[in-house]
Amino acid sequence: MSRPATRAVTLIELLIIVVIIGILLTIFISRFVGRKPNDADGLLRQQLGLRQELSRLSEAQQAYRAAHQRYAADLPALSLTATPGVTITILGGGLESGTGWSATARSSDAEDLTCYLGVGVDTVVDAVTVSPNQVVCKPAGR
Image: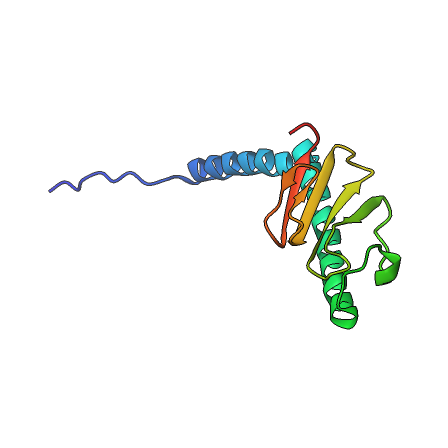
């Protein structure tokens, strides 16, 4: 009676497999750990910052309206200051009546990126249509 031959993995073969996996992991990890942000990452980061600025402005405007039955026309009236490097402009014909307002936020780091916010009746800013309470960010020329 002969036994069927079974093939087992030797210690050397196992060691070679572990070394190959280690080399592949080293290559994979080094590509992502040393990765520098590209232009798209920077643009997304700037867009997020401008959206946060407009969100802060919207909250301050709602509190101001609750106290004064109208919206504020500028940041000092809201006791709000923009983050350094960000310019916020409040616009809108519904400020006094309390029916609406709109605003733009621009970053000095990304002069070609502008974010728009419209609240109430003022939903068209610089020929950009904005749904109420929605922030739209557009690069210049698009």
